[in-house]
Image 1 (cartoon, helix red, strand yellow):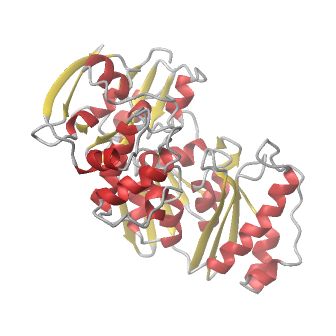
Image 2: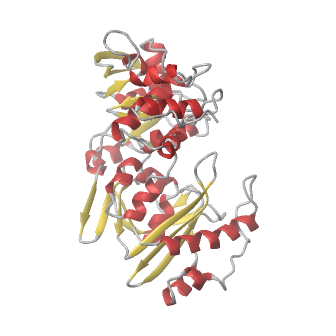
Image 3: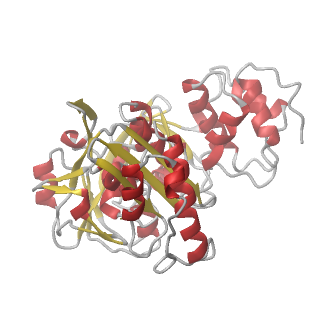
Length: 259
Length: 161
């Protein structure tokens, strides 16, 4: 690693003040620290968010589950208020990673194979930052790209709890990231289907499946649909055609398992 | 250099660190607690697992500065007060749960965390919990057997496959 300082602010205001120039916010570090070790980033200073008490914890109010940005995966896994989300969190990485990795870090990084972006997009979540609230539909802009401005941090994520939901991940066994992951959420307004791991565009909605499932919420409703392999990720773990096939398979499994 | 203080295995310690000093480096190089091993240094192998405030973490993927004020437990603090092996360590020895021993500190720390939360895990739960701990010698069967034995369960039916 290159050398840098670490600052540990206690409030969001102090954290925001400390950011700027060649600084980077540090949440759980489960992606950032390996990135620093590989010398793919060279900040002068890291601003650790771990001591910001305003960004910690989970609360349920009026059917909205609010999860602080520095809440670790293990705490979401054991919360249980939104079972599909807890199940997703319980299958990220491994136990030690789940004790450090945070929802805010995952949402801010927007790795194209991360799990949380699929949950946020399918649930119609709201991303709360130090300056504003952003609808998930307006937040995820493509692989590793989000609506966050320079120096803006994810302080919380608000999830409206759907009537039924489920997340199915086809695990890439070495990394435990999603080779393809599909989150399905059914509400009184309709059905939302979000796909991660598959596309060069990053997390995205599968609109045709949403329409079919709104009319008939069953795996059979997907049978006539096809998924294009255009723009699907191609790497040694799977071809674009394989990923396209998995999108439909995992969506059907998520619908069947949704509760 | 900044000062960091933490409690390691019940003992209050202080040290001077750089911003980029990893917790694993602080434990090994500054505190000379070399029982915590660094295998891959990329957060995959789990040889560096220690407990921070009671939770297992990979000490190679956490900065020492982030452990300011924390309670840290390492493999050096695991033996019984009289120096004898604790029940997990003894089970690893009894069931040949190690060969070269490099992964063992992380395996023991990960097991201790598992059994605290889930005192009677199933074999499947043990295997799932070991997702982040890699052993290149044993093939895992005897590690799983040792963990089942450490949890007080009958392991006579668990064959070395």
